[in-house]
Image 1 (cartoon, rainbow, N blue to C red):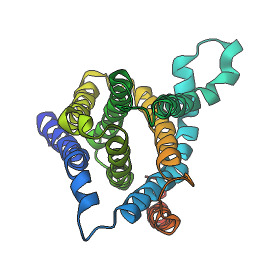
Image 2 (cartoon, rainbow, N blue to C red):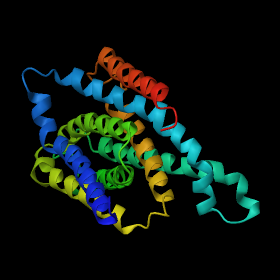
Image 3 (cartoon, rainbow, N blue to C red):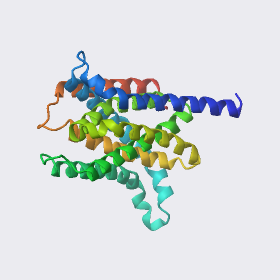
Image 4 (tube, one colour):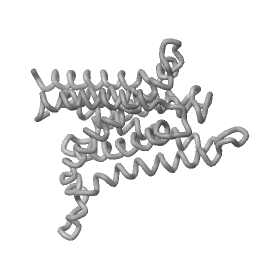
Length: 258
């Protein structure tokens, strides 16, 4: 296969994953409202699947990439001990960012008119960043030839969008339906474009993006699902977590070096 043909195949895979991640932005509300789909159970299943993938694959992968990311960011012998934790700072940043956004929304909860436009725009901008980084990372993975883990991550994130969509609809209602979905879709396209602009040797950016995504997913799940004040289903959350855990165990046993 020539270099041009390989590039076309690579782009083809990237567009497939872009389409898969774009679909939930337009179908999530319909899926949750479908009479044959129990909304609470479906959202809980998606949350369980996403958090299991983060704990059992994303965080271990971050630990393996800690040295390379640290070496790229830190220069000098005196700071070598910091290298192993730098990649996790991006995970913490993602967690803190979305926690701060949630506090901003809750501070205006119950007030007439709901959260002010500025809070909504900040919330939407942050989830757009999440989409951009997610697509950037997946495009890098798909460009080199998608692995089973790439498919599993994409599936987990598609389910995770059910939780994100539910949160937006609950907090911002029609304001999100008018334009928000298209902005989130645009962020996915921008992430794909960015993956082509960043030189391949700068793979550490993908690992940083993964850290941010992991922290964001954990906070979104804790906020939207692991809350005793919300109507959620622990049984379906556990089913989602166990299902993804079983898939990861099988894939790890069958493809240990992938």
